[in-house]
Amino acid sequence: RGPEMVSPTGVPTGAPAGSASQSGAYLTTAQGLRLSDTDHSLKAGTRGPTLLQDHHLREKITHFDHERIPERVVHARGAGAHGIFQSYGTGTRITRAGFLAKDVQTPVFVRFSTVAGSRGSADTVRDTRGFATKFYTDEGTFDLVGNNIPVFFIQDGIKFPDVVHSVKPHPDREIPQAQSAHDTFWDFVSLHTEAQAHTVWFMADRGIPRSFRTMEGFGVHTFRLVNADDQTSLVKFHWKPRLGVHSLVWEEALMINGVDPDFHRRDLANAIEAGAFPAWELGVQVFPDTDDEMFEGIDLLDPTKFIPEELAPVQPLGLMTLNANPKNYFAETEQVAFHPGHLVPGIDITNDPLLQARMFSYLDTQISRLGGPNFAQIPINRPQAPVNDMLRDGMHQSADYAGVAPYRPNSLDGGCPFHAGSQDGAFIDIPQPVAEGVKIRDAAATFDDHYSQATLFYRSLSTVEQSHVIEAYTFELGKCYETAIRERQLKSLANIDAGLCSGVAAGLGLPVPEPEQQPGNPQPSPAVSQVGRKWPTD
Ligand code: HEM
Image (cartoon, rainbow, N blue to C red; front, side):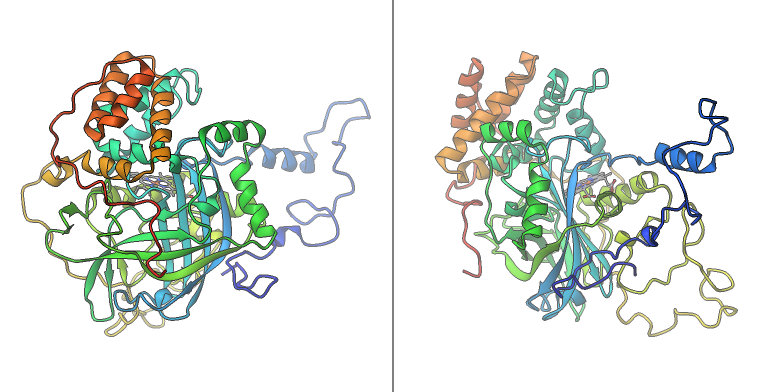
């Protein structure tokens, strides 16, 4: 593997070594030919036309012409850092994953991102933040591709293109946050009311974090863990920042975006450079792996639902410390490729229909973003574990494969790695019952409750935080041109909380609608709090 494993301070990191393409004392062409002049093209006389034979000119310009690759279709703007994950060993009861055994150190690379904006957009916009972590474990790479909000917009990945289309700039003027983007976004969330729970979270202060260093992270979906005895449990992953959770207020966010649109990436890089290494504790909420995959009446396969920590405390598994900045943004932060299907033995997925669609989407999009199927060979994407695959050729293939032909078993190739007993340490698909039933495009009835958790979250906020939510809805809906969309969204707010609805309605100068009876009503106790909770280890 290319990346070196030890930082200048002796702490292992995933930071890659310097590039071999910049060795030597002289400037050269890509072929290593030493150059005498890179400022003047070869011409027919000092005032004559440029000659086609000037290969240095053509190589230099041609390469420049192809410097850009497509930005990510979502999460295009991001900042990354290297670090180390130190496990406590507390997870061995529930998972056989080697990197969670006692005192194992695993290099990591993390990329934080916004979702909607383009690669050059500003940092302190109101948005969900991505929190994607690549663990370079001895058993293969594990990616935890999460967000800073524990619930998602939609319940089924088939709607992902739709929700993203609604939030991206309108096709005619390509102006983000213009009339059309507000109308389309609020049109979507008021028509697809499963999005209401996520929307309250990012209308709250978590939508404008103070720093990447002060964000929580969530795996969002329920995952299935498998221990050494093949026993399974269901879990939700959490990252808890050692610096606590802090946000900006809206006026600060607006001013910072004007003064320093790179505020979050600068903050992360400066902190690491100064040795103030940010750290997060990784933990899991653990649920029994029951046939119905429910916990306390909440459907664990519905990604728009979270489990309050009062019902299932987060059990700490280890500590991640980010201790090295990338040496090259493009090589590392831009080219890193995360995938929720990058799993290790002991961690498996569930039937959450959003997660199932993600299993397809990431590899598919990376083939076009990173120019073909061989991007796992880019240094930042190379596993730390030995690789012995049967994938061959294709664009940008750089591996020098030996052997007769890549098929197994293969009696001509000097032995076959797959034989009885070779499953030790391998990823095992634990036999799981699959639902018997008719082929159907529908969801379980438990997915119909779109409001109870929005209420739960809103009522867990302090009065000041609730006032920020009311101001945020009023500001954002105030940018909608269609009154019908504002009124439809107010109906959803009436289903969430009467005070929230009347506060926003007053700000918009619209009448307060009556709440509708919804699946999941009456609302759960407002005493259950998701915010300001204590560490389970305190
Ligand atoms: C990228 C999180 C749902 C498609 C990302 C990234 C994060 C993320 C953090 C940025 C990765 C990076 O930094 O490189 C999530 C979460 C989801 C979710 C937490 C739901 C819980 C979906 C769904 C789809 C999807 C449902 C499609 C069906 C994509 C694509 C990218 C992406 C295409 C760009 C990947 C690339 O170009 O490398 N997602 N996502 N995501 N996500 Fe998701």
